[in-house]
Image (cartoon, rainbow, N blue to C red; front, side):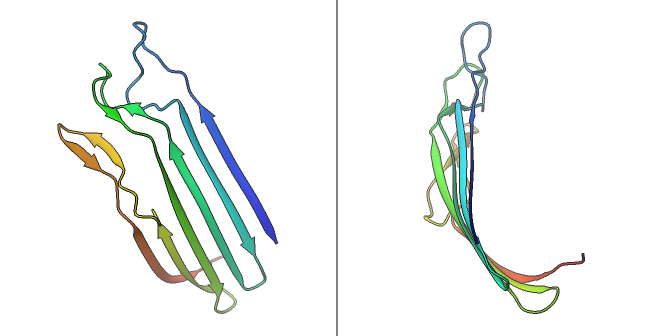
Length: 119
């Protein structure tokens, strides 16, 4: 079974003087494709944001970004599954803030593990 999902958020948030509210981008989006079978699932997606400002005076710009992720899961037993996930799969460099120098978001992250479903 294949499923697609996505969302987009448009925000227009300004101070009375016309400046943008800090850390509120105009556009945010995410999308994901998910394939499932009786014993396995595979998901791939992307999320992103348009530019935003770090400060209330709109001096420090945080550029827009988009990152991809992939997750795989395989059922090992009635309640056990093996899981592999890759976040920021393309290892994009993301400026997440200024304090007073640029702060970078996390690089590619790979997680592997065993999952147990209690219910």
